[in-house]
Image (tube, rainbow, N blue to C red; front, side):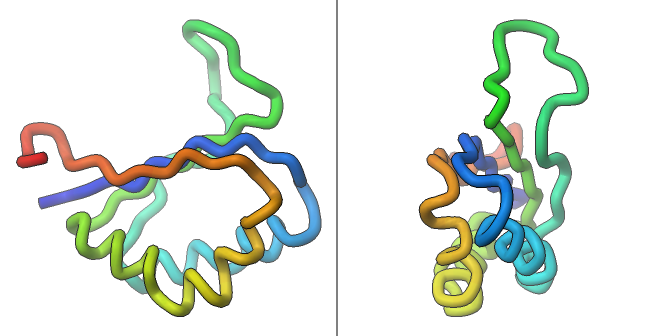
Length: 102
């Protein structure tokens, strides 16, 4: 049952710790079964406004359990996440794939 990790991030820092975060998070997510589908700013805004510091991230995972294993792993919580804390305000959630239980 596929699942998606979707993050809406309002960056307060563009350099420093967040650069370290970006450098490490992809490889770790992949090692837990994650795959990034989209991240960053929109290619084109079709409706509404987009804040200059707003970034979104969408990643696909085999299931919600894989996301939670990644999220709560020592690798993420102790080595990677501290580089993001204090650099942005985030809303992050797990979504089940369309047509799947949830």
